[in-house]
Length: 560
Image (cartoon, rainbow, N blue to C red; front, side, top):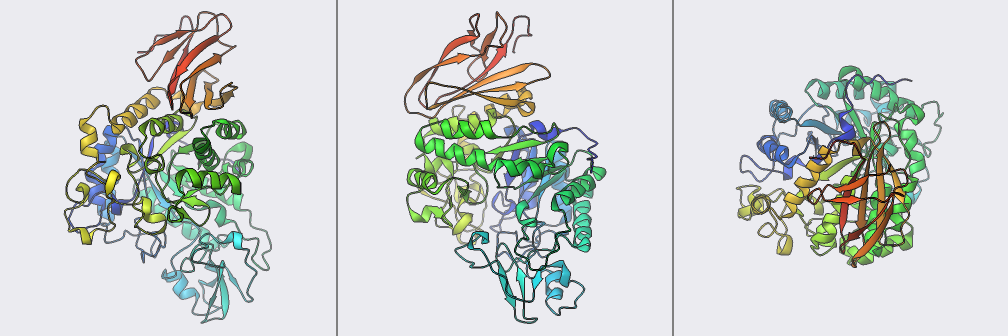
């Protein structure tokens, strides 16, 4: 199958921003964020430098999994607004130069969805095969259970028909039978609907679980899920040439290539780099860059239309499931020693600022790394001000507390009484009286301004998103030195990051740099560092320091 991309590859150097509408801004004072509130904050996102807004689920829901238990794929949760509000948001964002992508849950529905309510009436119901059923109870491997604190099996007995249905997530989220052509047709209708309303693509939730059918009795194996991903890609790009599919695919690197579509790259356009993220935290815990350096060397090169999504924190638990048990315990000990800070035995329910005790040196170093690694950066709302979590909120929702706009009532999120808020704000060192947008925008030395400057520097160097990476060998185990290289133009940028608490002098060698070349610092006033005839120099790094240095050859246009 061949892809039919007909637009520009904007996602190769986009800056993504993930927002949860119900916790972003409340425009009508009822305690719940809404779509109109999101529209009111588009100018803020534009000023920050965001070029693509990713919206978490906003569909009608029973609210048993923060919107991921969907009862109608074609609607809007009435608490948040209506379709007219949504179209206005998309148009407002587009006018500000911001594309919009939306969460698309292809794996499952709510058990209150009309399809499932019909399917469980009878084994002969027309919607029965929209889901995965078994007449006998299949064996369930504990490792297949996504939420082991609440579920002990991925199969649930339906008392009406005395058959078991598959649910990789909660029992109230039955898995769809993606192999069924009728289900595929329904998915296409839904994708087409939102594309018609102006979205530029989809973040596809839980992609590997779409195809995890090894335990289904009697499955013939005729359905090729990876070919189906290509079908979805073709469907969306025929309708919107520059639409993107960003997949949540937490699997080893060797398996991610398949989800991209192999050599042709006709599957997902983008995937999150979960392996890099997990090794970032291991390196941070150890003060040793080598785990991350190893992961970066192993990260596969991609087809030109494909891209990595680099992130520090997403909206779920900060999963560490691809680390070894001993490595995971190291990260727990460093950043979440209290059992209440951990989740499912595999992840953390904290944000980076609280993990490092508000140490902005480490925070800045980590985000510098995320933006200087080849790929496209993805921010989770509140990261730009160093928001913390609220551990009083259960489970994964601890990091989804309301956005902190001001130091005033309810952090400026809502004018409602505190008891009416959709979720409570944190207090203490990371409460809105100490961490908020308004105060930081007034202070040009603040973390908000650091992130904004980082975004604009990233956008001024679009080659980062198109480049390959080479990790340089270093005598200092605390230092990660990598080169971003865009082959066609010969553009190169050296990035240095110190995971240690001691200042170091970093030897650098770029043997392919022509005579007369220099490195120009992009983050601190365009200072110049000449290279000797062998392409060598030595550069200083402060504790938890970072530097971006572009290679400037003799005769190149100056950087301004």
